[in-house]
Picture 1 (cartoon, rainbow, N blue to C red):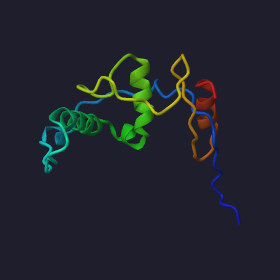
Picture 2 (picture 1 turned 180 degrees about the horizontal axis):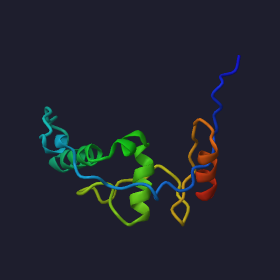
Picture 3 (picture 1 turned 60 degrees about the vertical axis):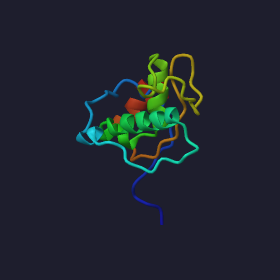
Picture 4 (picture 1 turned 120 degrees about the horizontal axis):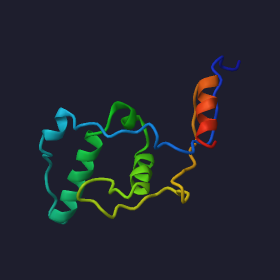
Length: 121
């Protein structure tokens, strides 16, 4: 028997409009404590720490998103993904106007369909 909750796989064409970068959570102040392997440079460890700090700073909504979408948005705005990591590779195809193709699974509603249409999907 089919579920009574319909789903939609749609093109999510523009995720930038509703994202905002919130202040860091209290966890951002905690030092990263891990054993440092001898074969990883201090520069690489600094970049890993910067990436972790970036992710800790995300809002609850951003935390639910794939980091590639957030990276694509920041890349489109000319911003680095994280402070101290200016050249992180993006593993996502972006259109010149910043749009990306994403598959969504969601409960279908008229509001959702309107948002997808407004975003170009």
